[in-house]
Length: 135
Image (cartoon, rainbow, N blue to C red):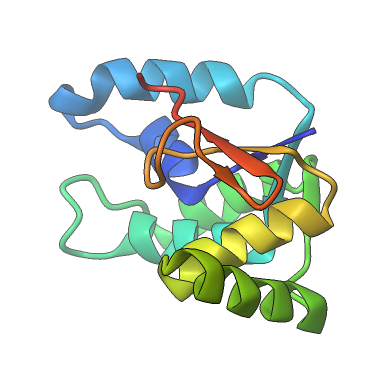
């Protein structure tokens, strides 16, 4: 199983011309069924996709419908063990707490890889490797 970070979801809904190649890749990824997400990733998607300063903001209804559709994937809840794992990863790697929470959620969900543009490509973070699908 692989874990998707928020940026994949955001590119999938982007209508910004400069992001079109990434949008196509993201949409192709979302056609597959083996993904894992976390509640945090879905929350971050909603906040970023609907913010008024975004060039192409989604309505509440559209963003909520997309989130509902992505519940077909495995979704890791944010639990005390996820938080504790994030704190340990923060200490080890010095990444943002939120990035560490993504990595921790992925590990607890049994994922060995996280697809993300936001972390170092091909870097192993204590058993979870990051793959940048846009490289």
